[in-house]
Length: 163
Image (cartoon, rainbow, N blue to C red; front, side, top):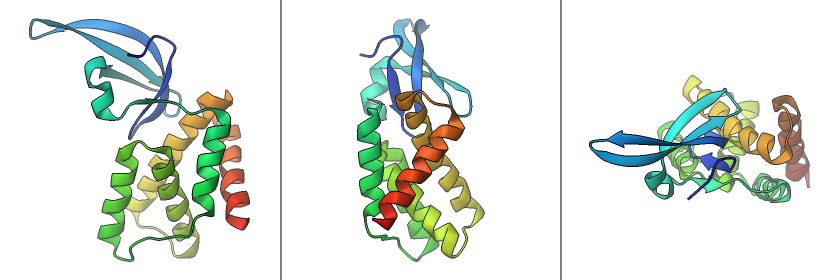
C-alpha cells in the first residue's frame, strides 16, 4: 500500500503524487482511495487502493534509472509494423503496460516516424500521450518544470540515438 506523498505512475496517465488517502463508503463497504495529482495536465485522479496492483500502478523510478531506461530504448533498432492499424494496436498495448521502457519505445518510434513520414492525427495524439507519461516521471524524479523535463528527454533520445 502506498502512503500520502508517494510518487507513483498510473499507466495511461503518468506519474503523480498521492495527495491524500480518502475513505469512501461504496455499497456498504469502506474503501480506501488514493487521490493522485499528476503534474502534466494538472490532473487529479482517484484510484481504489485495492485495485492499484491490478491497474499496474508502480513507484516512479529514480533519476538515473529513467535516463538509463529511456537511453537504452533510444539506442535500440526501430521495429514497427508498416500497417497503421497493427502499429496503433501494438503501441497502445505498450502504453497501457505502464512500463517506462515500453512507453519510451512508443515515443521514440513515433517521433522518428513523424520526422520521416508524418503521422496520422491518432498517432500524433498517441505520441503526445507517450511523451506526457515520460515527462511526468521526469518532472517528479528530477524535481524540474515541464520545459526542463522536455529538454532532458530530447537530450536522452538524441544522444542515445546517435551513439
